Amino acid sequence: MGIVGCARSVEPTVENINTIFASQDFTFEFHKVHEAKKSISFRNDYLVYKSDQPTLRREITYDEVLLINDFIQNIVNLHDPDLNQESSSYYIIKNTAYKAVIIPKQEDFYFEALIKTLQLQK
Image 1: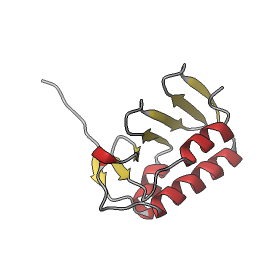
Image 2 (image 1 turned 135 degrees about the vertical axis):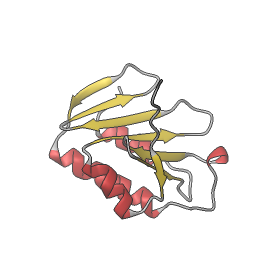
Image 3 (image 1 turned 30 degrees about the vertical axis):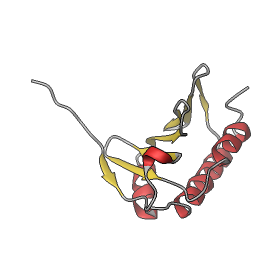
């Protein structure tokens, strides 16, 4: 007998996102149309960046946490519930209990800027 867990989908509201953040163990994924998924996972004071490049794991600073929080708040504000995942780039913020899908109104270039600012890619 096996047990299968699945995160419950929630709306990308500030309250729901803050609930996911409060776990201090969550993943932020970026899905771009026709490209490989990229993700940044957080657990306590570490971040793990996964992409088509080698995985990077390192400590995260308080200033980086603030930067990431601002970034996520900005994309939550750009969310358009009328768009669908099949034809748009989108983000998923999730932990073991909750998952929020954010589809921005416009093509998003901010994730790449975040990756460069955090020095996660060479």
